[in-house]
Length: 219
Image (tube, rainbow, N blue to C red; front, top):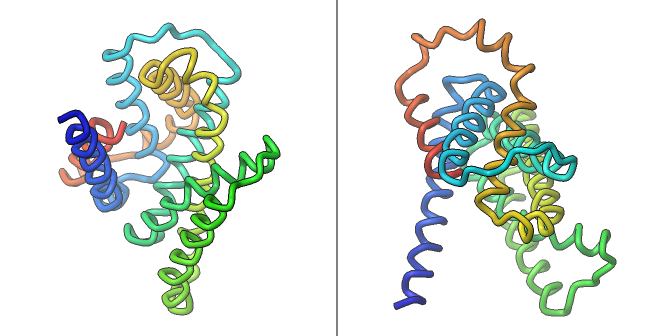
């Protein structure tokens, strides 16, 4: 029974994140990507604070995680998704675990095992098989989008690598709540102008629904 619950939880997570690429594409069509990121992060910060009630104290380590894991990741992800397609974005994001292992290799000087090297080679070969046939027909706009999504994946890999000690100390829920709160604070000065310029009455309902999905399910 326990293993079945684990598999159901994993399946639910994959389904939620799989849908997120298409839903985020709809949401970003109505908002400026940077502005959408601010609302997504702020909504998640409020929600997670109410659930986990973390103690908010400034920490350079946590602030660094908020910049890499949220500010950079979400800004580049949504901007890249706006220029690229959900399918290509999902494909590039899937390389995240490989990037984490590469960072480990350089920072910790921890060489990958033969099994890991084989896995990386197979994963990289799969990415090339899926990516290369369509590259020649892509516009410069789409290629730029792919590059931005890759930067988002890299920034999140940095977050995953450097968050290990904080996770042990605070737990995943409280750490994520703190990271979201500091990210929302970091975004605030840069979004005031967009807030003034935005006509919220002209934004379609689908954008608001997509934003709500991103806040509630993918946080």
